[in-house]
Image (cartoon, rainbow, N blue to C red; front, side, top):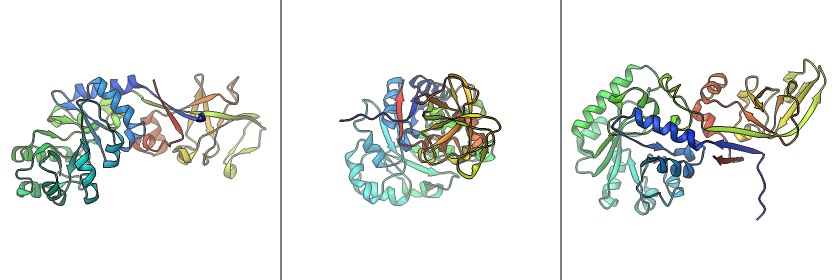
Length: 348
């Protein structure tokens, strides 16, 4: 087999990932702290994230689909896995065979699981204000869940990243559910919900973006560490005389004789055109602003003030999630999950 090195790499810090989880676990108080692994671990690689966090003590994991669950088999000893999108008719074979629980999201799914789940425990999602997945409160209280072996009863906060009255409303609704719907555990808080305080933790928290370096609320800003650092290889360093332009649409004109680093990176890799005019990179600690437009798989950086940069060197992209989100208009979630398969994932 011929091994061909990738011109893109995503450097991933196990230390930062584990430190983020441990801080979130401390903020969760007496509640267990789980980990959302959907979208391939937010683009970092779900299998590796599960192994690192399981070794650190995490025992509760969440994926979106049964295909994501199957890709994680076999599970590390002692962990549980829940499938957030529940169980459709075509999912029942996987749901019977895989050691994972569905998070039932509708009366139809509850009936399906009762009929074919062979009495196995499940999780249930009840909608307290998100109006996305989940049984309505009146359905949950109207007998649909009677006698169901519920491992964890969930709901999901819609506005936890904001100082919104909706947070307290959902908290009150979930507390009322806890009094009337029997389950072994209750779970409401995502990453931002954890930052709202102990009242939101219940028995189990489900952080996602904060594990991977995202800042869900200002309370986390000094505690969450960057996990993913994208790097791109330089294809060519070329001289552009003053007055000449660079890239599609002649979007940038060299104000002086300039040295331009062309890197193997573009919107096909998830580095989108919205970074044009705001993006940047570093080499050996020195800044290279992005110039011209981001194209499909090439992007150009101004290396005029950097001595020694040449073909084959690696640029580290500016990719602090909160800062890049603010300047690009992309959410922190998009910045991570959009990074494409051409990035070689390297954990250290």
